[in-house]
Every structure is written in C-alpha cells, then in structure tokens.
Length: 266
Ligand SMILES: Nc1ncnc2c1ncn2[C@@H]1O[C@H](COP(=O)(O)OP(=O)(O)OP(=O)(O)O)[C@@H](O)[C@H]1O
Image (tube, rainbow, N blue to C red):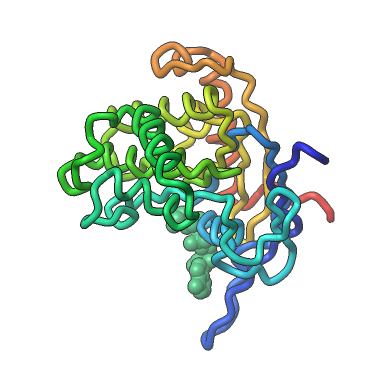
C-alpha cells in the first residue's frame, strides 16, 4: 500500500544467554501510515524498548521483519530520527544548541546556507529562536528536550520515533512538550511513533493507540482515537470521550498485566 510508511510483520525476539532464553516479543504485527501519529503503550517490561530497537535497526529480530518506506530495516535507517528520554545524554555538551542541531545535517553534507535556514526554522518550530548560541547545560531539562526535537525537525526524517521522551520532565513542561508534538504533527505532517508509559498521554497525543500485551508481546488492541485533531490540554482532557478512551486503555493494560486477553489465532 503506497501510504504505508512503517510495517512490522510477525516480529519475534528471543534473547539468548548462558542462563537460558527469554522470549521478549512473541509476534508483533502493525503498520503505520505516512503522516500518522501512533502511540504505543503496554505494561512495564512488555518489550517496548526491544520493539523500538528492532524498528530502529539497532537489534536484529529473531524472526519477522520491519520495513520503512518499502525498505527492509537491517541497520539504523538514515530516514529515521530518534528522541529518547535521556536528553542529557543525547546532546553534546561541548556544542552549542545550534551546533547540536547542525551536526546530523553536516554529516549529510548539506550545503551551509541550507543548514543555516533548516536550523533557524527548527529553532522557531520549538520556540528556541533565542537560544541557538547557548550550551545544553545552560538550559532546563524541558528546553534540552526541545533541542533534541529541533534536531529531529531540522533533519526532516520520514519518521520520528520518540521513546518515553517526556518521562523525566515536570508535569507543566510535559504538557507544553506534548502540545509541541501535536503541533509538529498537524502543521508539518510529521509521522511520529511515540512510546509512553502514560495512558492519558497516549490518548491525548495519538490518532491511534497500539496496546501491547505483556511479554512475550503481541498487539492486544489497535485503537483509533476519534478525538478532534485540534486538541487542548484543558478542554480535550475534560471531554467525556477522552475519559472513555483513557478508561478503555487503562482496562486493556490491566488485562495485559493479568495476561487474560486472548491472543487471536495466527
Ligand atoms: N539483553 C537482554 N537479555 C535478556 N533479556 C532481556 C534483554 N533485554 C530485555 N530483556 C527482557 O525482555 C523483556 C522486555 O524488555 P524491554 O526492556 O524491551 O521492555 P520495556 O517494555 O521496554 O520495559 P520498561 O517498561 O521497563 O521500559 C523483559 O522481560 C526483559 O527482562
């Protein structure tokens, strides 16, 4: 299908070690269309990190496949950007904010003038237009995460993968960063795969929420979020439909933890 951007097919991952084998992922199947914002939630230890490592080409699955934009992922794909929870470790402290955002573009050998305008544009997109000359350690945690997001925006990936990106910031900053993600998605059409522990966050952000079972993992539910695309922290979260959806996802996670959801026959 032309607009399928990411396809995960029958993904299985078994970790082998001297003490035995652990089947982390049983059989995960899902697709993501170009321009979608998909959230992934699941109980603790359900294999989210393992799944993301396979999707980002950092880990070979035991079987099954990941395809991005029609190409099998076997190494880190150049058209994917990643934003992690540990913003402190993802930015180079000896480079300025501008230097951090520029680096992947320089590695791509983009012309200087294009780099300058891509960085300016990304700084404006994340609201850091006055911070380009600062160093990461001069910024708050939330601002550092904005720099990591700006780097991804400037890089213009086919897909942005975010792994619990706001788990380490305070609630108010988190709300602002969630709105930034929604804005990037709506205004720039960015395709975003967002992994979170937070059920409310998944419903607030996503157009779809993929609920994972406990390990060995499979997709317990792929839920369409039928909220208006224009969302607001106060009014959207106060909607009865928001409460219904979050309650539904919460119950699914409880079922996942108990392991009493029936896996469909292959
Ligand atoms: N390198 C490894 N060797 C053996 N087992 C592993 C390895 N990495 C992960 N596991 C196991 O695989 C399962 C899934 O782990 P994973 O870290 O992917 O889950 P997670 O959902 O990201 O966890 P969390 O919710 O704590 O972030 C767990 O049972 C874990 O113990």
